[in-house]
Length: 269
Image (cartoon, rainbow, N blue to C red; front, side, top):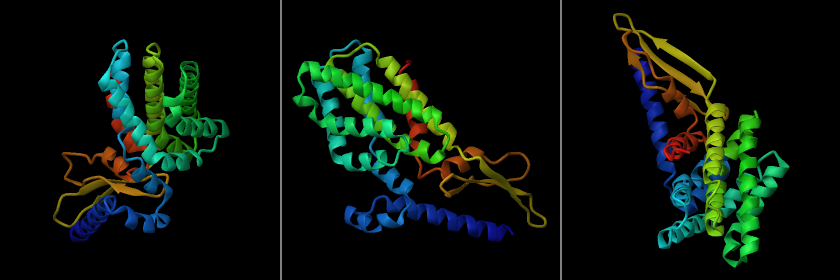
């Protein structure tokens, strides 16, 4: 049994390695295979941009009381460039959200964000306020909805929309309320992590005659992806269920949310 177990674990490890390596294929090759992938896999690759760090770079200036100068302008330009490069993927993900009000405002602000350089002061300030309202609405949706599919969809766009909001508020000169915006983003990501954590988890055991027992966790995410923890031998330690949960949800928005939360909380808002 131990031999069969080692073989199966080796095969699983190889499968994961192939999956990870696949994210680096050329764009042309990726395009030919995207139709065969589950939506969450394609979305996870499309949303590989570190939206949270870009938003935090802008938030740092706002939390410091404004100012900024050339460095702030560069941070805002980085967000604009990222939106321009991935707007199609963001809107495609937004279109899958099963809430008309949230879908409508998220798509509109993603499109209009690239026009903020052409807005007069009054229009820019009004638009920045509307974008803030849309982002907080998306956060409330993540907290209210129960369907893991819907939570996953909103989880992928939380990063871009809050980056848009922080950049818009900085450009409009809105300093007050930055902490509240970041708290709303934190609540959204907390909901994503909690609601996408697999509940279908089983602790497995196996023992060959004359050997200590082997134990490991196996979890299945809502989208059918499976993940196993490292196995441990004997009774002195227990396997780590979190490993299996994280590996099962690798193609969802949960890893992004888990990574983002400590960064956002470190801001002390």
